[in-house]
Amino acid sequence: MPGVVKLCGMRTAEDALAAAAAGADFIGLVFAPSPRRVTLEQAVTICRAVRTVTQPPRIVGLFVDAPVEEMQQVAALLELDAVQLHGNEPPEVVRALGWPVLKAVRVRAGETVEAVRQRVAPYFAGDPAPYAIVLDTYHPSVAGGTGQTFDWAVAAAIARAFPVILAGGLRVENVAEAIETVRPFGVDVSSGIEVAGRKDPELMRAFVAAARAAFARAFDTVRTESGGTR
Image (tube, rainbow, N blue to C red; front, side, top):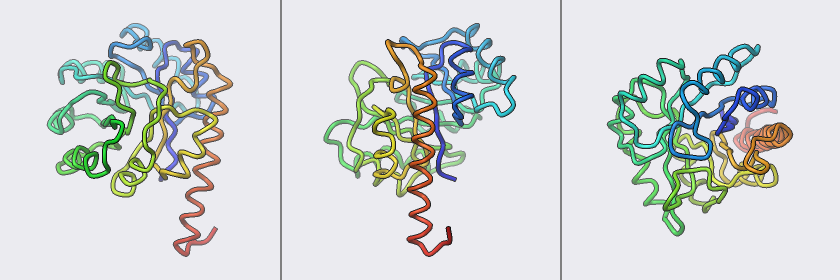
């Protein structure tokens, strides 16, 4: 069912426990060059802490063009629930991993719906397909976490054909509008829940609450328009 909320870029056990308390469905650990990158040792500590809560969020490891064997080893060591491919990984990597995958596709300014569709479709042409496509904002020098949005009309068109987790510049103030516009499968945030580069528990709670309310409104409207009952 739509309504997945992912909070990415956890760097400490305290971050991850705050995300769990906020009600996140997924948390993300970054294993690629980034200010939010964690070591394996830090990731072990975070995973252990999160799994002590009653209803822990699923844990996703984010990689950028890493060797398949490396990703498999990290995923197995940490017992990750999914691997997020946030680089230029081809569909063959999704098939080879043997792990549930979120595949990021970064949308350039001015890129058309058809151009994005042609990049997304091959990932769903074979088995296994990704759990979802993470649509994020393209930046020439960083793979993600830019805090910048892209054309949500493009995202909305892709979300009508594929499971989309919307990322890129989301925050408490705009997540409801994003969900209403795009009707995605889920949303993903990193910089939008930070203050001075650090995860903020209050922003996490506010973001999750705003997203949950917006998903409820958006998909209740869909059911009503299609003749379903409230």
